[in-house]
View 1 (cartoon, rainbow, N blue to C red):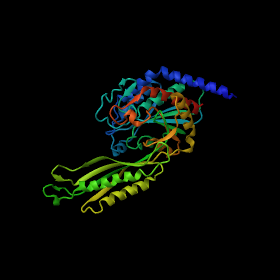
View 2: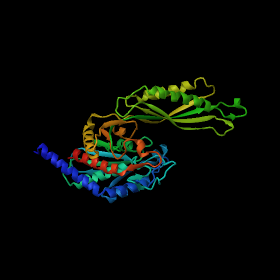
View 3: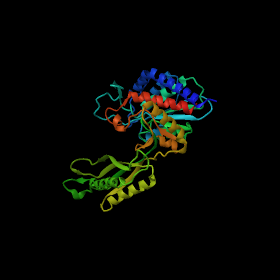
View 4: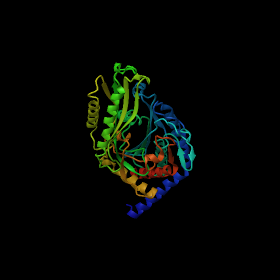
Length: 418
C-alpha cells in the first residue's frame, strides 16, 4: 500500500503528464474549436444536424466514434426547429462508474454589431472570436481533449467517459439530453456540464417562459370607438408584470451566486398599421426562478397578475400559454466527488481559490439531476457571462482559459476513474 507521500508524488507526476500532453496538443485543440465555430448553429431556425455531422468527422479524426441520434422530424418541427442530431461518444476502460460530459452546440443567432466574423473562429490577442465560442462549443473542445489527455497516460482506469454533444439547450433541452435520457440511451453515474473556469456550479435558477396574447378589436384610428385597443390593455399587463420585479428584489436566495427572482419581457408584437387600432398584441416573458421557489406557484401567481391587470378592460380577452418550464438545478448529495476533484484542481491550475457556487442561468444539467444523476457545471469560460459577450456581438473566449480548463477536467477525470 502506498504511503501518503508516495500517493502525492504519483499524483503530481500524473498531473504533470496530463498538463504536458495538453500543452503539446493545444494548437490542435484551438483548430478543433475553430472548425466547430465555422459551422453555424443559429437557433432559431435550428438546422443543427450539419454541425453534428462536422463534429462527428472531427471526432473520428482523433479516434472517437460518435453515435448519431437523429430526433424524429415531427418532434423537431413541433418544437419550432428544423433538424437535431445528438452525438454520444462512449469510452469504456473497465468496471466502475461512468462520468458523462455534456455541452450544447445550438446558440442564438449572432445579431448585429460584430467587429469579427461570427463564424470565422478568428484568434486575436489570445482570444478566439465567434458565435458559440463561449457558450458552449468551447467545451466540445475542453471535454474531447481532456478525455484524449486522460487516455494518453495509458494507465489502468476504472469505469468510463461518455461525451454528449446535444442541440436543444436554447429551447429547453428536452430534445437534447432530455431525449437521450428518456430513451435510456445514456445514464452516467456523474455528469459534468459545460460551464465556467472560475467556479464549479452546483445550483442554478429555473426558468418559466410564457406567451401572452391580448385580443381586442381592430378599428380605424379616425373612429376609435369602432375598435378595442389591445395595446392599451397590453400596457396594463406590462406595468403589472414589471411591478413584480420590485417585489422580487425582496426575495433572497440562500444559494451563493444567486440573488433574487427576475422577470423580463423580451418580445412584443402587435398591430397592423399606424392608422389602425391594434386588435392583437403578443408578449413573451421570461421569469427566472430561484431554487427555493415552486414553479407551479410562480406560474399561478403570474397568471393571476395578468388576469387582474385587465379585469376592467371591456372587450379584452387574454390567452396565456406556457412556452418553457425549466426547473432549477439543486445539488444532489452524490455530487461531492465531482465538486472535490474540480475545485481542488481548478484552484491548483488557476492559482486562486475556486469554489462551488450557484448561477442565475438555467442549463441542461437540471435534466440529469431530475433523474437522480449528480451533476455540476464546469468548463471553459470567463468569470462572468458579460466578459465573454456570450449571446452578444463579439462573443469570445480567452485561450488560456481553454487550456487551463482542459487541464482541470483531465486531472479530475484521472482522479474519478483511478
